[in-house]
Length: 372
Image 1 (cartoon, rainbow, N blue to C red):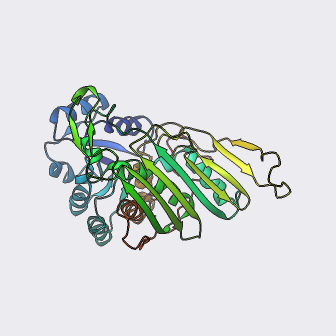
Image 2 (image 1 turned 45 degrees about the vertical axis):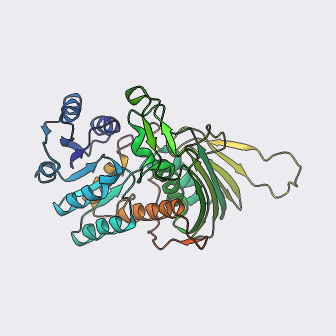
Image 3 (image 1 turned 90 degrees about the vertical axis):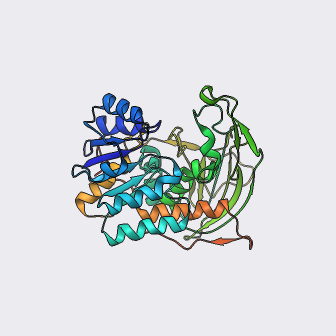
């Protein structure tokens, strides 16, 4: 299917490279960026024929079937709606929107016009989390009891060329890093029904350390450290800590404990790390030797950064008239959970109203570039 890309910033290079070298069911026909030089640079490097001057020009092109939105978070829902109203399927980088109201408007338009919509992150379609999904589906760990994850680092101040937006509404650690973890967990275990959290802003002002804007000050608008608990519809309990304020955490990125065993899931952001499995042995008593840990080899392709696989899978789903895995309902649910963590209820517990249909693992045996 033909793809038009809005936004030619840092993240676009990975998408463009994967669409030109890996996912051959996608052809990039046009790009646009408010910085025309950025659009020209990407078009030249990746041999894209058409550079548009406006978003509207790209959205109305007859040779664009899907619009991919790689802009700042505040514009995602606006551009999704515009693309859908122009009759195009649409997919955006995370987050889906800045509010549930905006997200509902997107879903309503997509349903009324019978169009597909999708949202990153798509790392759960890579080798590590797909293998973990198969482990859960095949009942290796039995009924899931609990999950936990901890992720912390001292923010993007030192490495991002323009980190200010990551401390403003629509970002912070919950809406920047959090989607990888919450989407991964709900992909593996299903919808979340309740959450509760505490939040804080450790540093009300940050100083940019990267070369491009070194010394600039950033006023922090959103929580930068969050601790929370959650309950899944299937009864699984969970806890999480996520922060832009401290040194990197050495804890497992995600640990899932079940009645028959435990798995440690690779980093859902980078996909780095082994899949570890520990089988429960009921004959052991507390204090006995630790249960042995096995390293499980991945049974799927896409070992490295596979950004774009969600768009490729959506294109295949459109052609086969089936729901795409990273669909609008899934994206909406992820957003509702993240916003509930970021804005704790005065009562202490927030009930999550949305849900989604179960998502399946890819079939085993796919070659690199295949999503069916």
